[in-house]
Length: 285
Image (cartoon, rainbow, N blue to C red; front, side, top):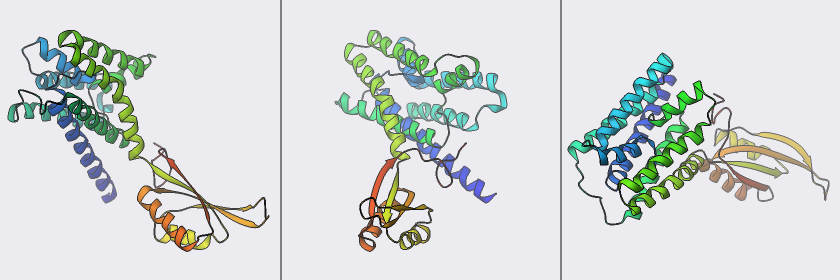
């Protein structure tokens, strides 16, 4: 029970952090520059330019409407995390509009602001994905499409994002439209890179004569496990042992340093891996 509470507390803390990053990136960098590269926030930027409503208000209305649609289609199956994220983001943007109004961009450097408008929401999406949460918004549309149609979800959402970006070219100016196109092209790359770095682990293949000291260090100091099997050198035909283990980055540094100092004859191959599934890493579900 206590373990479940700790996990839930950790997850909702991370979700809150992700929501704060997204709200900061959207409100301080995306909205003031009219960057429109997809999602509900992109729609909000475009609609706020042709209606008397602010981008934050439009975002709030669309997100709440999508939540209602989500409950209609999924009922109790609709994720609590999705609701929490959607409400938190919508209230955050509306609150900032009220208490921290922005009449113009923070700086005179639109390229710099585009970087933050891409990176902060992308990092937010990576955190949410990593703990199995959804950011709401167009993710709800994707969930509905996945359940009730055979439409390629990635293509459908990209086309929607593309239409929003094209609209920005006509509603605003060419510079804003081009910046929005850059944001659209870079968004998925940055999200993928952020997810990969968050999950990055080190995969060790260690060839040695005596595996016991290394395995003891892995078990006792790093609280990890390993797989070991016998091998034979093709040149000397001496008996060797091969140790396979996976570490988080901080633990990998400790293991590498230990082997270099205490087992200098061991042969190490260290490989980056961002998708480790199993006990102690990502769950099978």
